[in-house]
Amino acid sequence: MRRTARGLIDLVIEPGTWESWDEPVADPAPLDADYADALAAARRTAGVDEAVITGAGRLGGRRVAVVAGEFAFLGGSIGVAAAERLTRAVERATAERIPLLAAPASGGTRMQEGSIAFVQMVKISQAITAHKVAGLPYLVYLRHPTTGGVYASWGSLGHLTVAEPGALIGFLGPKVHEALTGSPFPAGVQVAENLHKHGLIDAVVAPEQVAPLAERALATLSAPRRLPRTPIPMEDPPGEPTAWDAVRRSRRADRPGIRRLLRHAGRDVVPLHGTQSGETGAGVIVALARFGEAPAVVVGHDRRDSPPDPAGLRAVRRGFKLAAELGLPVVTVVDTPGAALSPQAEEGGLAGEIAHCLADLVTLPVPTLCVLLGQGSGGAALALLPADRVIAAAHGWLSPLPPEGASAILHRTVERAPQVSSAQGIRAQDLRARGIVDRIVAERPDAADEPAAFLDRLGAVLAHELATLLDVDPADRLQARRVRYRQL
Image: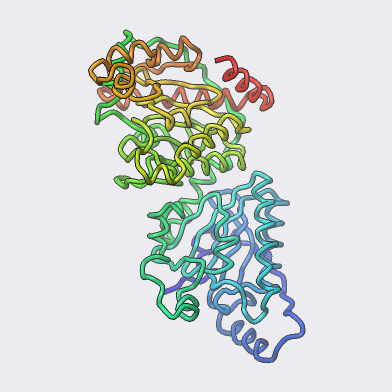
């Protein structure tokens, strides 16, 4: 049974806190008799006066604005009156500086109003963009169905976008496709689960889980940007492994990666890309999380998945953009044997995506912190490296190629990889001596042998470093970053 817009609002917003922002609608003039009859019938059967409901209430104690589509009202179609109501609500949320939650359910543009209804999507998108430019969160829950201009405007602009299980979501509705082409649209394509599989939405979430998910996301997106700091003394790891020893230890299958880091040291973690347990993707993870009280957008390599490909690096850049829009720090996690090596990766623009990641990261206006967690091989590692501060696990390393590849180039054999890794200065200790790494987190003796203790140490360092970076004047921080990498 389809849940009404008001039913969803009652599920998400704390009881007794809902405040409607809706004003009486003005029907378009002149009003065709058949359309007038359809509007009157829709108001009787749907129990609402238009296809959207707007207002504000509390979620987890935080005031939020809500715009929700009502499919029972002429298929949730958006005409001039509905668009004006929605736009005013977005503008009010921006003026009152509160997060905005959208829950569309719509077939798209209201055909009875034609072109003037069609172009309403422009002003809705303009208002939402202004809300985001103001640094305010915009979360979207796509309900069944969401198609057409609604999906191609306010349904696709969320900082976080999730969908109802089994929901039909697509640009062109299947009935329209069949009418125009004479053939049915392939089954299973325009379904929430398929969109999630292809990285187009962040999660598939039952209505009952919308409130806790939004509460976790807003805990990070709306977290304070100035935080108290507890100094953590620098410590040198016990002993210094050889470069080849570090390489071998970093490749242990049981070494903790980004998933375990988020689970163990992160708070209020919300996956944005590739974070479903046991699911392979494009070699990267993007998530919202807090370390201590410090908020961050976390992007990084997942050692369990295939090497990063162009789609994965585009997801990384999406994380960078999200952080810039909301003024959140970025934490990058480097842990990869290299980028994807395939014709598809080349044709997908792998080199260009690496270049754009580098360019984006060195110019981001927000604090940036890199964690060299394990293997740091090739351009895919470099793409996530140039941050304000770089911390490394004791057995983390950075190299233009895997040592075996460098050995093959220099000596026409992989047998000299140990000697080459030493000569290239790839260890965390060598990188610190050269100003590439700022801090080393101890492993006693391996992170894989003491994962909880290691991740506790790393999480504490992350919280401290983020709080420190947030306390630096942005102009000073950007200048220091430019000088840092100019002087390497």
